[in-house]
Length: 311
Figure 1 (cartoon, one colour):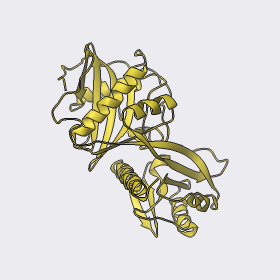
Figure 2 (cartoon, helix red, strand yellow):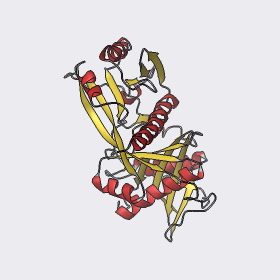
Figure 3 (cartoon, one colour):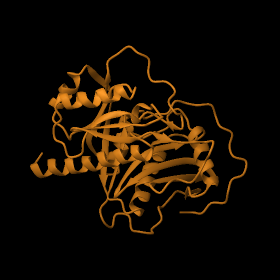
Figure 4 (spheres, one colour):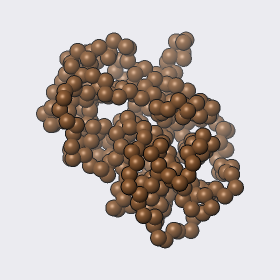
């Protein structure tokens, strides 16, 4: 890889890093700078992916003692020692610095990125959909209920593309915040699929894709959900879209849509036999690195379905 290509790859990964950092802050976490690391923690929610140590922005190396300071701070905060970083921004030897502290790999998940060039998705041009399908962006409490209904009744192969926790509060549904885009896919006027994007500056993250358990999770449907996400990101003037996947079939679909492999996000955790953190706030569901949602008990569909506008 040429020097120019390496430089561009690192530039893209830094945009991903900044997006994820901001996403965690949007969920209520705080980033406390300590030396060359940030200690990210949530004051009330012990969710593993809202409580971790990460190298500070624009660092190219963090010595082991600096990581130790962050780990010690997490212990003071009564949080399990955990380090998360984006491989590709740091040399392979960086992993040894973390292992020297007695931490082991908890998860590693591949990142895929796609640039959106000018003119690829003309502004205002609707996405072409097969007959019987239409789209709607969540902008009312009623459509938020429908989005949550599809999500909670999705099958075991739900495509959770998240390396940031999902916040789904069925008790108090509300339209998506300004930095988030929730989209409903209707089939014959019935909600059947959902997509979620989060936005930061000109970067979009495909956080989740899902279809009702009654819908066949075919490659064509998965590809369509990705295309929907790409289209909406472009309409929001995003120039970079990223996502993750563990399944080779999903990776192939992403590659066909122009995504490229761009390193991975790695999580190290203290090597102990202690049970996992309890009392995690379920409103912030899904591990950052969990790519599939375990099947839950079906949720009753909403009785009243609002009229919907075609995107």
